[in-house]
Length: 512
Image (cartoon, rainbow, N blue to C red; front, top):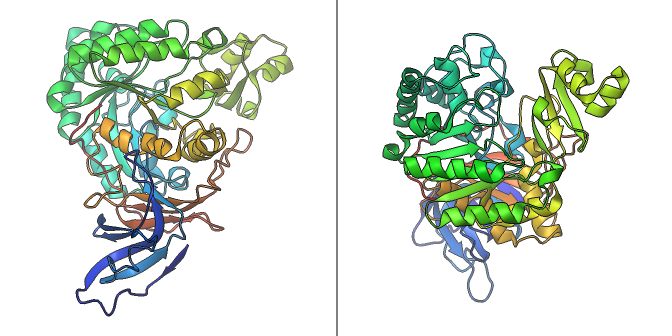
């Protein structure tokens, strides 16, 4: 890749000014269509012209389509792939986009937009009475929660100017924490009404919708009726319902039925978060699970996201402690020296059983090697699935998906495993994601759209992050633009440019 300040087309009859020309690239535009050779002109943060190569194979600029353009910056793509910037639809970056606005774990893998507020936990609207309840503690310590209204969160994001765009869901557990004296019970009618007031305020300021994390201890006592009532404001706002199911284990079909019922009642699309078949006893059920999703799709808009790994990560949940899978402790407030060790090894060292060891470690985080390759492959390749990392940026030893999810789809699953073509992989991470979450004029390489773009080498792109060494930037990502601004350069440097052009993206429209 080359970059300079030269101009092109001094002899052209008509002169056009633009900020950036990206020449000699293979465009995969995020629609699922075939790649095409082209040059791309960017100005004012948007794609202003795409010049395709001529029939003789020559580049469009050489044939005259962009000969009249002057650019402050010209990039030679050397035939590499230019695609839309990746949209990470499932993140827990809520406070990090403000506290660590460079967002290198995401920017370095080509992510240009994150959706925060997943799994029922969000940074706003939140008014803490004490320490953040589990799993809201995944988003940071109490000091990180300083946004009592969603409007104040939007303002903070835009003031921080993160390097990537931010769109947000509102967490059910966060709303419960605001209005309830304790979370191990159902909410009263008055508490639900107060939650609805906060949800409506957030929707009025551009929130994408509501998320739940009904599997977690601080939400599991919420009956379906509570969520049905809380979901009612969503339809009028054109919002969505995203859910970490009440169970991803043996009761997954019943949990899916609950999600579909909520979506149908609220008349809104449903997104099942990080679809999986968790637990050894659940392995091999992905066909059954996807058949249930397809059946629901006949009657209502339903989709899902998936991360490209066979291990999950969250807080250390006593309900998930078992000797049938490997569990790695990633952090422990009470026993910090145990971070990075296997739970079984800790239990053996202390000469106690697994459950007692897990109790002594609380509060803590863990990686659960709880899935099977065949199930992940089947779910990831399904047409309804988009990609989300579910990375935990505040974990001192994070799951490698935080740094590697999107290059892993491109390298491991598309190029090496040939699970799906590169065009399909990119659609799952761009165009389809933008459609599902209502991110207008994003997700496609198209004239008039915002210039969120990533240039990468399809032969070398891969995830470098591992469970042992997870904080590693991806290989093969050459350059990343956010709203037309060159924000990251790969190669030997693998470093942000120092220019941050991200912004808050308000909900505008959506389709599922």
